[in-house]
Length: 409
Image (cartoon, rainbow, N blue to C red; front, side, top):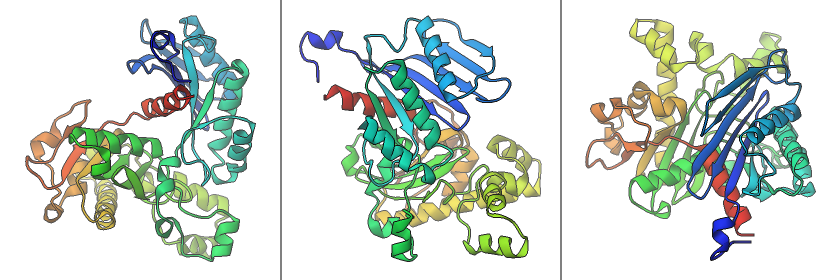
């Protein structure tokens, strides 16, 4: 229930955001009264002989310890203990909820959802669509519920922002009955980032999101693009899985589906072999042996031909998607670069927009080369299309959506 009057000052305003990955748990504690981060942490190498926990409170020194962490349940218990040591435990009356990143919400979950047994069962039913991530997400939710059964748990889905993509864009052109039986369609991912960045881009332009068309380029080790019309996603590059679309650090992005059949027939590769090839030995690392854009650019500057080809393939795919999404939207107000590569690599931004001046898209070399940790424009003054760098904040977006849900009752 929403607090009013004098109750507002004493109402719980903190949200713990949990991101349970396949072998790690990341967490942040935020106070939604002012957006302050009270603590951040990471437990990684879960299940290995030497796991690592790093905990950083806002007030105090960071703490690091190495010790075996058997599973995700143990990882979350260790994180909860670190928070409790700082007086920020899960039993705090100032904690309003726990917000969980859940990778796959299928077609049912179109917005943040308060978790109950039925919701858990549906997330479990979606495991075949995200076998590496949804099981870990489920463990995080179940462990947090067990640690404090009275605390609201909210699931925020990576796919939710993309559920507005129209049917003609979400459908693959395969037999409808087969597709429906096996839930084969384009879902899209990185949704919390695309939602946050598209909204922040509109704010940067001093306009309401409902008035702005934005192409968002989320470029990290995983990479995706979205076309957002008036705050609503109408197209996105990732599909049934996060493999489709842009060239990524280790993932191929778009390939002819017959490549899979060819490798099976001619090279004798198994389904698992091909899965590993496309997800872990492709993309930039497959083209040149590196998936760190900084290292690739260093090699390019030294005349390395393999690195130069990898960079050119990466940039070509970006330009191709920018052009396609320009056509989808009809007109574009802004292009926003975000995530590790998008925020930090001026050469990528320059290459991704090269030759697009006829569409009103170009970057100013001086602005593009400047570094800053805040949203900023890198296009020339008066450009028809604004080009922006907008640091993403998925944890803040998850916390915002979680708090909005529990605060309204």
